[in-house]
Length: 100
Image 1 (cartoon, helix red, strand yellow):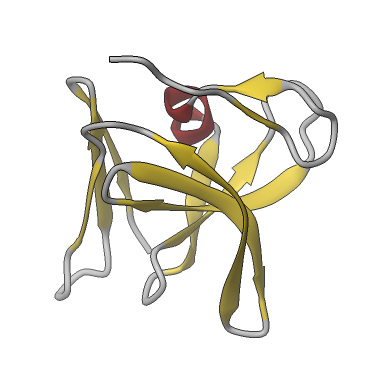
Image 2 (cartoon, rainbow, N blue to C red):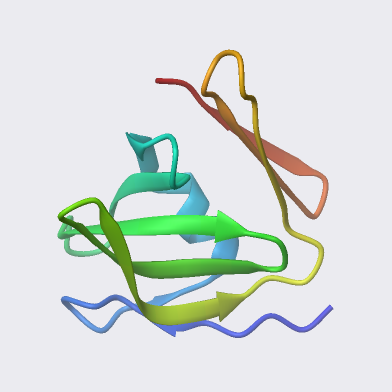
């Protein structure tokens, strides 16, 4: 599957979907499914929202997520567990889990 890379919003480093998910640290907003992320190159902060087939890169502001760059990720699945608020993401046989 072909993957497009996106650039870090701060330093311009090219990032693939799995790199972005690897750099996510915690849930910023469980209801919106937004994660806190730091660029692996510059350590700058941005937010991401994994959604079906895409990692959206942007910023959480005033209870709203503003998408700056949609990064296509064929086969990505994101599931939010209603009872625990955990977010589980799968892509290419890899899995990430984020808890509140």
